[in-house]
Image (tube, rainbow, N blue to C red; front, side):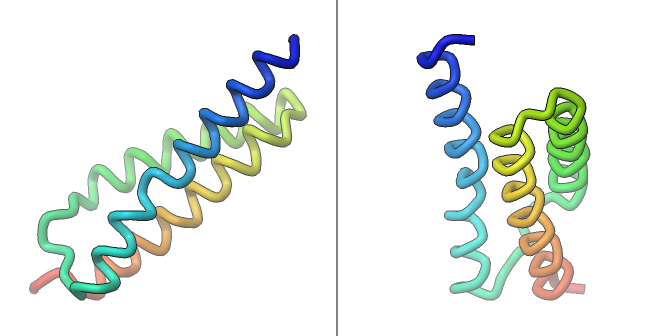
Length: 87
């Protein structure tokens, strides 16, 4: 793998990892989560977890760390969705 591929992979991982941060900030500020799908979050977390497993199998730290961060953000968002969703 050449250095351009490495930089593109790291950039893609970072952008993907921070993609849900604006949604997380919005939920925290508004204390509302009615329009966020729990199924979406569970599906996304499943995919991210598989990426982590793939990264472990390849011993690829950027894949492991960026997707691990994404899972953490998703877990926090899931907790807030459960907390703030109207019953």
